[in-house]
Length: 215
Image (cartoon, rainbow, N blue to C red; front, side, top):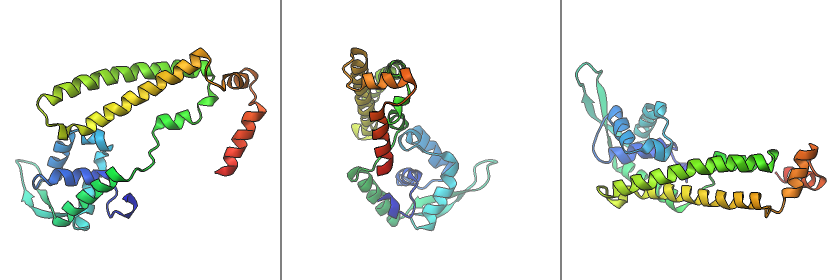
């Protein structure tokens, strides 16, 4: 699990999966990771790269393989992965794939309090989000089809997953919007009454209090 790892930052996994190819210095690692889209896959914060590399070395997952000087650039340290680093990388991937952990996207956070907006306003915002999602999905499908012509599928599975997640979100939003616009959503009268009167209906207030008490 992530909590027991000596290096928890996912950038560490990105580094290990890059250096496993061959020894390289951090600047080269960053160049390759950017080219492979690891900043999108893992939410990389580049400012912590050197700290993560030093931590990986500290815990025996990387070791110094030498130094190199290129032109007027300062001398750069080259790192290579160790046997312990290979084992850590494989174990980390096993955990991430096999053990689901709760993830809290910002959209989910907003949905948890979406009642503070009138249903009509929320419907408009959802339609705007859906339009953007549909544009993204169309672009991703086109890009994926292009990549498949030259890239083995093994290197595209994360892109396939991301596309599937976006498609699922778009499908859910369409369904929710349909409920809101057709009047099928069961809590609409109570929801509208809240915003028309400016006061939360007693049944909603009771549920809110009950939820707070259970936290």
